[in-house]
Amino acid sequence: TRSQQELGISPRELVPVQYANETNWALEAVKSAPALVMIGVMAYMMRGMGGMGAGGGGKGGMGGIFQIGKSNAKKINKEDVSVTFKDVAGCQEAKKEIMEFVDFLQDATRFTKLGAKIPKGALLCGPPGTGKTLLAKAVAG
Image (cartoon, rainbow, N blue to C red):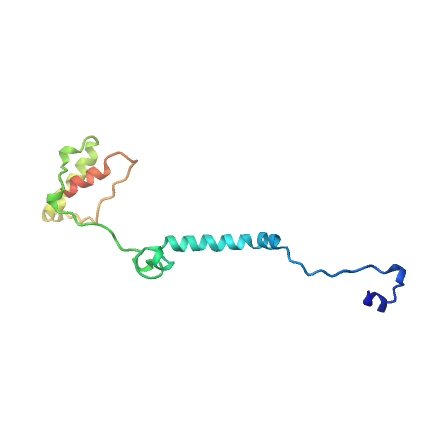
């Protein structure tokens, strides 16, 4: 009211002003909920990668960041594989191609005399359940 009097407003036209210093905690919680959810999601993701200390698991610091690119392949002995080409049924063309690949690996000199280059590997592709893994085991055996 003092500032209204200083502005020269007549007492009849004064607007009553009341100052209240209250905090609506429920409204403040709603306002900060998105930030808290984001922090929670980040903490969950970091914990899943092993970055949240002892409870996270994983190897090494920073969630096992140095384990990226490390192969978990196992070396298999020839005695461990019991699958042969006789066990693989169907797709005679694929079997024939792979058998030529195996022959080349067993005796490369015969093929290199003809000008063949040493293959880097074989790519087996196709839908699930078509025997790609069985064929690869037969090559290993």
